[in-house]
Length: 68
Image 1: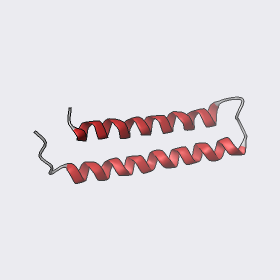
Image 2: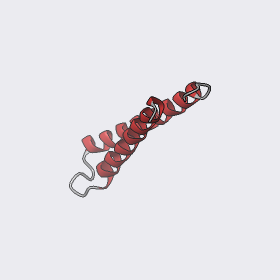
Image 3: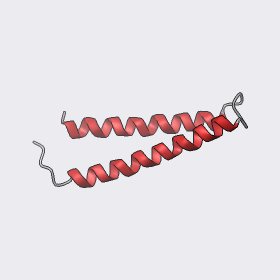
Image 4: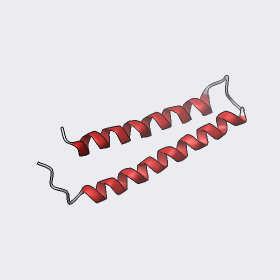
């Protein structure tokens, strides 16, 4: 298992965790309408988008890298 693969798995896990947390912030009945949770959900979506952009950058950067 290469370091590149481990890096990809960790970034994808971070994206998934961010989106699950955003889903919780927006759908949990006990937190509905609370400004803190709305802001946390928006921040979590922002973090997920930043991780997607980073993953794209990482894949482009390591595309030419030969890993054996």
